[in-house]
Length: 472
Image 1 (cartoon, rainbow, N blue to C red):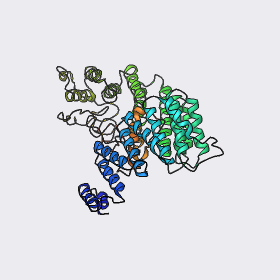
Image 2: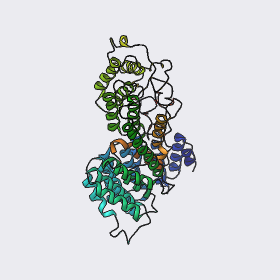
Image 3: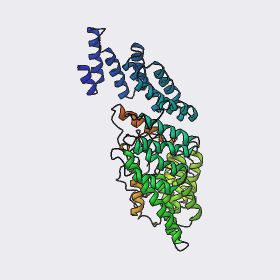
Image 4: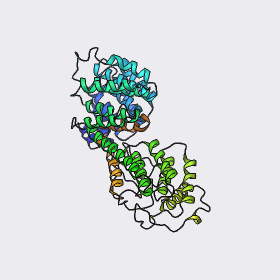
């Protein structure tokens, strides 16, 4: 018991000494399985994955077939899953499925094994694992557990991955209708909207689905997520209408509206391809406006930070910002990024001209240059001004984007793009094990964001190779 007290106080060396003393006094102590499990949990808390896996494996070998042994195997699989080692995770879940005599652990192993197959882009195998888990007649044999709704959510995710979007919608609606009291009902309704928005490009249907989800269980974080995406879609429609209504009368207003759409896609919707396309559209169609250098800088930043293997082309785009818009603040920020990345800047500094104020912000003094002693230092998109834009609509887009990535409002979403949302699984698993959720970080100030605002960098601690404090 003294060892458990030290565990709660996170004093793991003292914990282990107490446990070792207990086993010295009584090598066959009846709670030895608890000692092994708690020791493994301590290593997991310290983020020592190899040691945690080793200790859980010791527990499994000593207590194979017991509830503690099952739990150890489940943790091994989860640790590998969070590390995106899906093959190793799948082996652990397969072993658990063969070994356990507990129905709950068996279902959990099969659901998680199916998700590893989805992550390994083999949705057909995942579906074959999920089929036997649903009650044969769901209308007559409804269960009080949440697992059938979970199965439907993951099955819909697999359907979407292989292009069966109508089947995905049917499974999601079934989860809502058959299991309305489930903790996953609101998430299923949210995913109906997400399927319409992302896969079927039916924004009106997506709006209706999100509106319904926003009126469901107040306990679900997906209720807030639905309201955020509903607001974003309404804003997107309004901005597109504004571009159409202005016609050719005011190109600056058109360009600003188009830039806001790009910001909405990037910061609020987290849709990289759409944001990049919109930034480039602003440069192409409104190259003579004050929004053009911001859009060109934003496109270069996205290529550098959001796309693997695009570093060289991104640096070339930053150099193009300097050559094309030498009197913009973005040109100066581009030069700083090139220097921080170790790129050739010969002759570029001489191209800079006196900065002219633009239509979106009053320009303050040049920000301090980045610390080039750190690897991967980069300004955030459109950096160059250290004050908020003063445009309430743009600032609101940024704020809503920050809220949409709050770890308290994000759980594993079995239908979302795994490339974008692998870190969500880590957050949910950490919460399930009682670990402290990662805290928020900050983003470097840029031209369209309040520098005092705190932005959550996702569900995992920020990578030092990314923007200081995490992506915006």
